Length: 107
Image 1 (cartoon, helix red, strand yellow):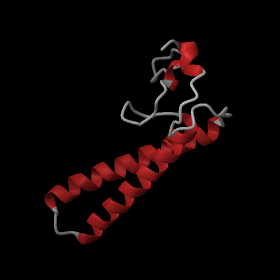
Image 2: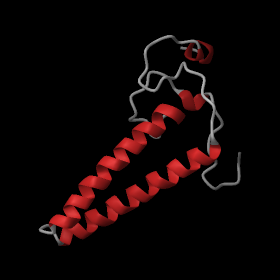
Image 3: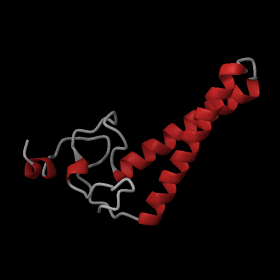
Image 4: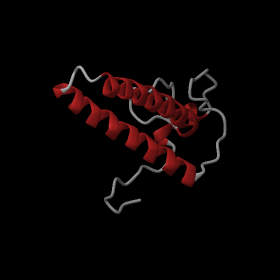
């Protein structure tokens, strides 16, 4: 499928690729920061639970953060596109937008 065919695809996609979207950079940045915070807390709690598996409060908090992170990631991906290759979408939207430089100073 060519890039032009990809843009004009009318298939049903969970991420609503065919809908024009406006990007609010500040909202997008804030959502990514929240996702990173949840992921950090989830990893730290998992490390803690490795040595304290009986701590019900930590286990409950880990489950809560996992659910909140999943919900936030789903919301982000529906609006801004996939975060990873594992997101179920029929289009390769990252081909249509500038790639993030990942701190290399390249835009």
